[in-house]
Length: 360
View 1 (tube, helix red, strand yellow):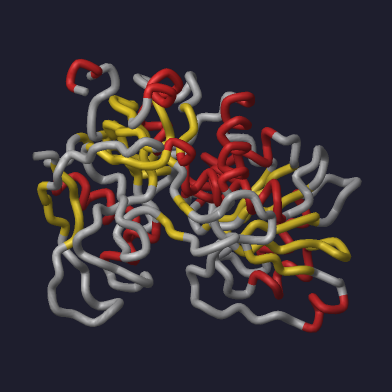
View 2 (cartoon, one colour; view 1 turned 90 degrees about the vertical axis):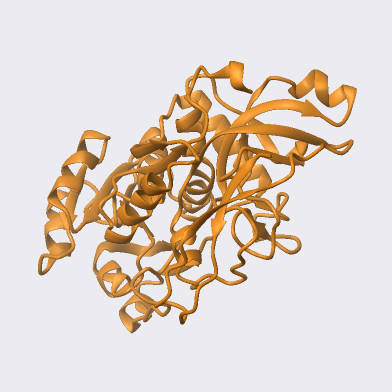
């Protein structure tokens, strides 16, 4: 029977427990009339997967395969019309379900793939069956591994930069914090491709150097005192302010941002890794600074993002790849990279090696 990887229940309190990975056998699914059967070739990690192993994510369960990001090849469909459209195509899975096109947010109950009770599907397995409307054809310039690195971080970055910031325009200045993580790197790539002057922050000089090589105009180490003053020095002479900040950390970003942003500037918050609350200062009020929450994105935004990647020939940044579902030690190693924050780019499990079409 086909194999999948999920987590094993052990005793422990949320935040203290760390559920071990376990391999299970699952029946090979059969597609319904509106569905396609995908042989998954690669899957990638996100921070939510680490939170699930620590029981810090809502709806954590033990019988749903992990991971939301995946790519694969369509090997069967539920109807002749779908067969004509999708058979043998390489596809990228939409990592969430229940959000069609509204720019405000999900129209109904939104569910993300992998590891929770809200959705029975996950990508850390050999096969998955889902509605044909929930996939995009993989851009030809991307490998299977790169395709799997794109969905959740790409969608989150796309909405944060292109939809919510309102400043993805040539010549505008955007600060992207915490460079090195998957969302931040995709945000850097999307904004740069749109002609934005991108500046980044990190606690690692090595990550700042790599970000400049990817197109960042400058960067600052947030561990340094008064880093905001150093950033101002790097801004263009004719635009000594930020138009927007794209942030996934929280903390004191509003206080710092009030000194850097123009009047009416925008802080897009797609996460708060430093803690679940973020203070809003009177200084930000007086400068009419807006905070805009941004989580994942719609099915329409997913299609727009993949099309942009195809048009601009964007390649997701890969930090490390391990091979095979049977390689639990290697997969655990990817989780360790995420726990320590040592990664620069996406952490990917290659389920089937590129070019191994004979095994599909």
